[in-house]
Length: 99
Image (cartoon, rainbow, N blue to C red; front, side, top):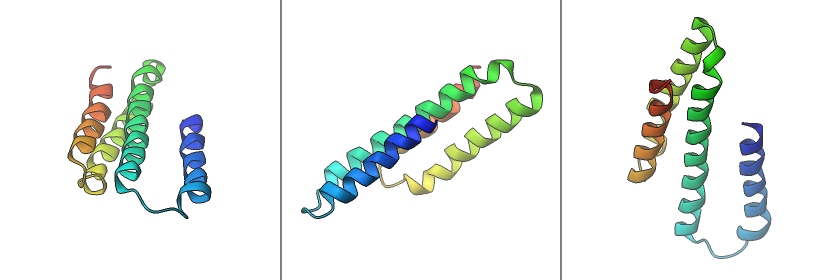
C-alpha cells in the first residue's frame, strides 16, 4: 500500500514539475488517473484476499466493510469514465467475495 501511495505521489510531483507548464492533454491525464485508480483497486482486492486469511471475524468484517464502502463511494467520483468505474467496483467486490 505504501509503495503504491509513494508511486502515485511521485506521479503528482512529476506532473507538477514537468507537465503542468505545457499545454494540457486531457486524454493522457485521464489515462494516468484511471491507471492509478485501477492499480489501487487491485491492491485493495489483493489485501482483502491475502491478508484476510489469518484475520479474526472482526478484522475480516472491517476489511469487507471498508472495501464495500470504497466500491460504493467511488461511483460518484469515477462516474465520468464508464470503464474505470466498472473495473474498479468489480475488482474491489470480487476480491472479498472469492475469499
